[in-house]
Image 1 (cartoon, rainbow, N blue to C red):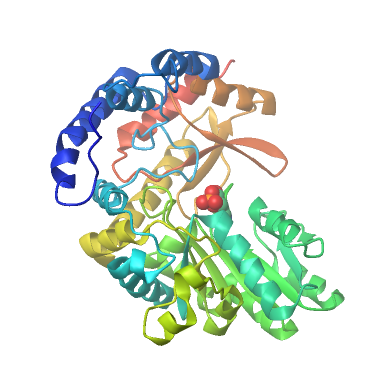
Image 2 (cartoon, helix red, strand yellow):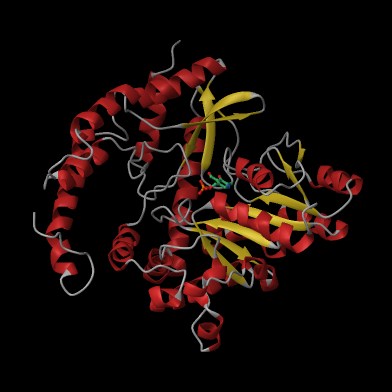
Length: 452
Ligand SMILES: Cc1ncc(COP(=O)(O)O)c(C=O)c1O
């Protein structure tokens, strides 16, 4: 076999072009072979298909058709968030333009741990993170792999700023990555407040803060995972201020409402946070990964400072080479900022805002359909783009079985959430191309799969 071509350099684009053609054909054929939002047959059938297609993972001699076969297999076996009946999770269909930009990131392969590996990408990251931080009302922002890493970093910065006894206070509606980060960082056990209405109640928070001693970190949520609810941020911020508690807001889901003139008002109070988690691979239409953590006081970032002679020697830094190592806990780091920058510039605020408005409007349309459907019960009007519903009078076991039947048959991907002590089906609408017919078809499928 001749030495395989490289993706970058003068020959790179020429080598990539026919391979991309192969990839695009395999994507098209694999998606057609699947036919629906996910492969039919459940885990055993899909695993058997993948095993058969892969064969020997590391054969003695390579196969030139591996690219076509594996991409086809993955496409045929994917849960495709671009299919309107794939609406379970905060798992968005990426924009074509963002995905194309991500290809350039892979081809050029800049690594954001030192300027000599990423001269232009490091400046692009500075410009874009500052612009996004200013949207939130913060001073700076770090790029992360998503909500989990952002929440982890937020707790780390709080610990380094206020000491290792800082105690996390959150409600039961918070994402599990927060309590996990507290565990990982060796912080005291978090204080977990009840949230019977699905959001953090300021009066309950106030009472808890009154009874606690020592440095405290309150974590509120703007867009809960289960229901897309937004905690009352201004009121929570006021209570934190009154008690001298630090405030982190996990806006992994809701943060992109900032792009919408109509919906950004729901995020009032975000600017009061010390740190904010954003995640543009949820409501933001980015390929994974596209997380951010905004930081209000840039001095907090001093905790991440790190010196490694091969990456940021003092004399290099003094000579003017930007020191990038303190921008992350990772060392080698992809330029995930490129696809974000391309998306922001291509769509502009109005284009992104329109996408946000569309998916929020779809959620209201779905809620209307459920509300008037005699066999379905709506949990509540949507705040962002999540709609919870269930077949009327069904048991929790039936609700769970409906979801699994649809998954196994490859007909629809719906999520599940437990609220008010009942199990609900969850539709998280993130596809701006979804039509009213798609929404009606989703409900017909649920009704048709509910035993009477
Ligand atoms: C509110 C919230 N925060 C954090 C996360 C974690 O994000 P990621 O999966 O990107 O790590 C999620 C994931 O759904 C989430 O809903």
